[in-house]
Image (cartoon, rainbow, N blue to C red; front, side):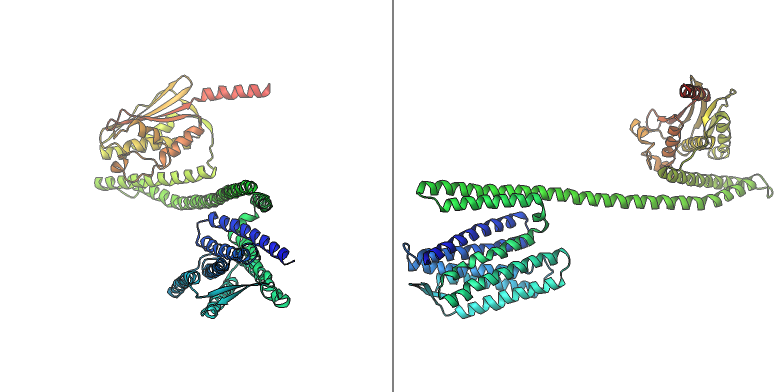
Length: 560
């Protein structure tokens, strides 16, 4: 009966050794965090303790009775205990998450580490804790050393009670996931303490048998398993990981039992090799699944962050557009009033003015006109971005629009000494579109030509070819490279030397002009022979006649 109990206990301890080793390795390899490393250190202590218990069982029973080896196995259990309790206490600083530590905490940890290492070495190579071991008819009996009682107090009071007090304090302060993790940890600790206490203290006390005291390592499975769940957190909640781990666990357990039931040396070697290979394969498999799960979770996290960032950018963009719209509307009225009064003063409505005053008023008028244009651009940009830019299409003579626009530049060009060349066509060049919006585009192109021309002329021409009407604005200004000409119509885009000639532009005018022309089914582009050789801006619009024919054709097809 005794041998049967001993065999069962040894098998349970071997199973616990296997389970604890696999779980500890998985947690240790799962993440490079301090909590994982300390948990691995604690599991290493459990493994050493279990090996010591198995060694005692092996060398205190026939046919391998050896008191000397049993003594070293007993001392090995104390070495494992130091690792277990040391890792248990230090882990309280880093699990569930690292806490901010003061100098006292760091010094306390250093003292504990030094004490554990010193006691661990002394427990193996001296009679510090265990002087001798006696083999009896009912089992074995340790002869403890001089410092066994201080060891017990150090382990129990400093490490176990102190560690539990720290964990309870952290549990009291924790919230959400961390409280759940600590709940798992406390459940595992409680189960291990209860079952360990029953098997190590209660049953031996009432039965007089020391065999059940060796089942202590098996009771640690609860602590290791539930703490592994707590540290790995949500990953074990993933069904894919659960299935992989369960499959690996039962595969290894089956092969381990088969290894124990081997009948000869050949089977021992073969089953041992298969078991070892399966353990390695299972670890690699679970690590691979965990990496896949982490990668997917990281992608989901990044996707959520990106979605939040997009929403925030959209909100900011809407706020920006709303601000621009409000600010532009508030500026528009006073600028129009200023423009009206300047025009009245220039025309002599308030009396005659000197030539110098007229030139000054012309400069003020030009600056105000640029502000009016800037406000109009900002309003149009705001409407474009909100999809509220509206047009009033009708047939009109574009010659009249260009002629009235050029009238506004006669005074500014004469003040700067720049020739504004315009030969008004005698024929009517009718187009289909929003005359006010197209006037804004034409004004923009002529204004650009004047701004970036320091001397020379700006020539405006209109011509009709086939079913299109083409407007050209040619200047003798700074010119540009083909690359710059291609990118001019982007939002906030400006030429390389534009800020040197004119520092006031924002790069919105051509962007808005391109949008308006595109909406009129036309084309807008720029050409230049190079830097310093001037530029030509072209607008090509479908003629009103071609639009009428197109509409008639569409109507005809619609009627069919």
